[in-house]
Length: 366
Image 1 (cartoon, one colour):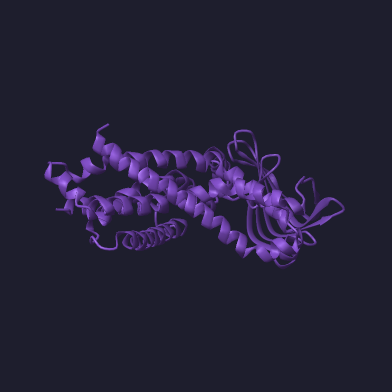
Image 2: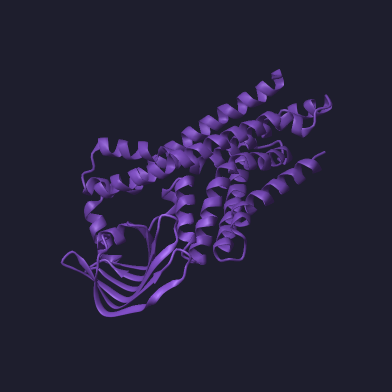
């Protein structure tokens, strides 16, 4: 590595680490101050708070690393531009890509590390922090559950290879409405379909009303006529608590778990749910690479800044670029889940636009 590359890289790395530390400190401080009243009210111990924020570190890193990459790039290259060092490098025959290639490679390495953290640690961190938060706010949680007693459009994967689709679930006293249950064999072929108008949990058992049962062969052909029962006791191991706590969220799964979850749902024919899950899956692949793309986007902005007020310009530009980037990403994800864009395109559209715009701006630099 050339001395010049080491000089630029050292500056960016030091700024990146400083930004990460400052952002994490501010994140924890603001969160503590926001919840200080509840912490005192529920007498949360120091040990539990430390455990909570240690578990939360991977999540915070994923959230703040793109801004740290952007701010460190803007400030480092802005300072080089301010001190006329960029002009000296260009005068020696170096292109912008040659000057910034080590920083772009650094961005790729940070993105790969973020990808690993996001898939390996973040799902478990979300689960752990939620459990700790439940312990800290037990009384508040109970009050919230009373207010949020109804869940609409619940879809979940249960025991014995069953898929549940519930139009409306009332947690207390445990009422299901608009019920569809699909049972599968080991190859995920539908073997039974149960449709019921209503279900109530009584004495540890589910009693379904106006229930129709369909049986199928592995190749999808119906066996006999559907069986209708005005009332039927169903041998379902899931309890109202399982339905209340379920609603699996893609953010709580690794990529492998989410792919398996999508595969299980693929046999049900629920295109909307599958489409939404695919958007979430592709987003897990693309999101960590925001770090590299936002560095590439920040380089031309930093070289276009005026020489005065480099620090303030860096902060202002980083906030503006980061805001626009995430607005575009949110719009693309919404369009993907709405069926306007293909899932893969929805998850990568903001990256494609930002990458194209960054390269266009670099090519247009004098």
